[in-house]
Image (cartoon, one colour):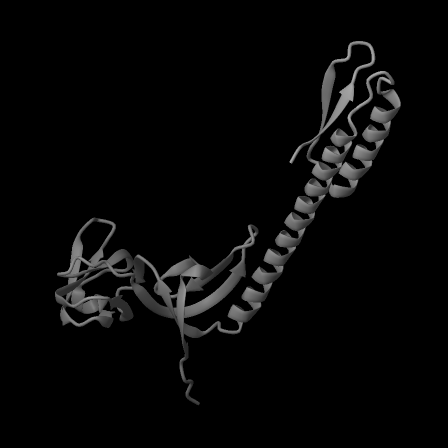
Length: 222
């Protein structure tokens, strides 16, 4: 917000404006006070400034300070929440999670599992994987009732080399549900822009907002 101080020129009677922008709340307040005093001292005694203008200027200053304080509080709160999220997710490193995504990374041998949720029945359901070469690879899932549809991708049986593939579910009802891929949460990072980044096997780097479920940590044997 810009705070403008009106000043009556004693020689011409013309009105000029002075703007205050880009300062901190305290700097803006000090500058405003100095300009207000100067304005009062130099006003034309025969044509003094309307007191209502001073009230309006004080109101603008108060609004500017409030907005600056709110912005500072919001920024600090967002930073604190991001840090808390990193610490909370950090405790889940090693867990199997579900990530909502439109792509999957295959190593050429490891089976990958996932699921989608249908809102209506589909008599012909197909999981479609498309590589960088544009070739489609289909996994027939048959007839599916409304609800969760589980699927698995076996690179060996499908003859899929290691690489990244786009993944989508095609249905007879033309519904295009979101795809969730299961993977191991490898690490959690707080980026310089304040966002939280996850690294998940079978998916790669992804935002924390794509996390749809925790499936727990795999049991370890001694």
